[in-house]
Length: 114
Image (cartoon, rainbow, N blue to C red; front, side):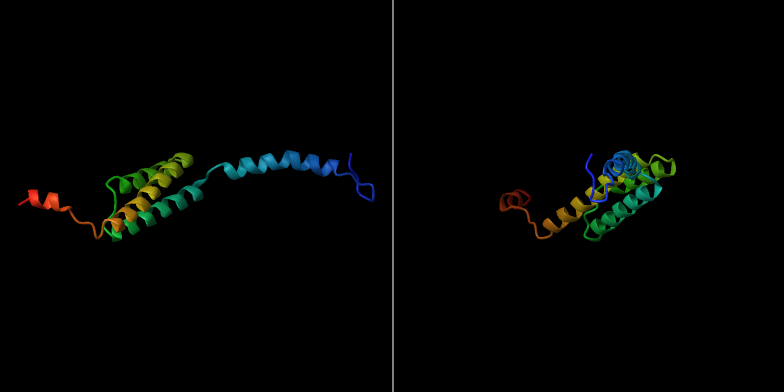
C-alpha cells in the first residue's frame, strides 16, 4: 500500500474511485429525453440550413418526424441515432447544394438536347 507522509493510504481512495467511476460512466452513457430532443433540434437546424440553399434531401424531414415519435415513446437511443442520421443528411445536402450552385451541363449533353 502506498502511503503519504502522514501515513494515510491511497488504497481507500483508489478503491472508492474504482467502484464509483464505472457507475458514473454508466449513468452518463444512458441517453435521456433531453439528449434525444437536443439531437432532434440539431437535425432540424441542419435540415433548415440545407433547405435554405435548396439542398434538403427527400427523407430528412421524415427521419426527423420519426425521431420525434421514438423520443415520445421513450426510445431515446433509437431517436438519437435517427436524429444523428437526419442531421448528417442535412449537412451533406447543404454541402451538395453549395457545390452544385455553379455547375453546368457539359457541352456534349447540351449538344444532344438540341
